[in-house]
Length: 331
Image (cartoon, rainbow, N blue to C red; front, side, top):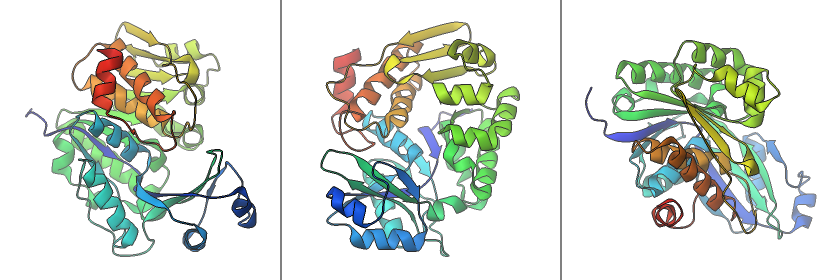
């Protein structure tokens, strides 16, 4: 097995986040559910975009956000995700590359257009999100650069993208490539509703030993295992996944690897401003330690530090020098 070129290669939704401040009256006029997240079609996305004031446009999506956190910690990363050959596809590609992340998935020539999440930010920081999934839902196996996957120490998969059929087939192929190259496969469940729909797939992969690192929060753990008690849920998966990482929000996180168990408290935060991206950045912090072979507790600590940083401001990506922060907080 050769030394990998990348520490982490991720497959996920390629979405452009478009954030604009607005008054609550605008949200009412547009008929949006304040503080909610709604799915919209291409026409709906266009109309909302026209109604927005000056906005910030940047690459987004769960796995892409995790890679942004990893890159900020000096980790070598590559992203695989589908954009269309349009303006927002160019925005996504330029932005993710500017973060130091390799991205070479060919743009899709057909409809639908590139996915986007239109986020209206109220004066109090509340975010009203409207998501058009777009081209990201049509990532085919043929678009995978298998040499990139084979060249990544860890293949990181976003559960959200398991829902549409075409990307699901692509991720199954990616798993085969990664395992054939002797690499690890990490999986984030993303959301309980994804497990409701595809839990049988996930449980089969766990039983078959396909997943090396599994990220869940406590509600996802309960949905996946059928155990309402957190400890019972951990026990039912312990030994089936080489590294199990379960977060508990303000109550910290637990990781179990082989016979070792580690637990850390949540990092203190002066004020929780926006919890969007907390799980994504926790995964980034943890993996940044894992790829360096750091102790399990240290990896958890790095995850907690990254999560605390991102919930202290609006937006799902770090806004400070994360390497300096890690040195300060964890040594």
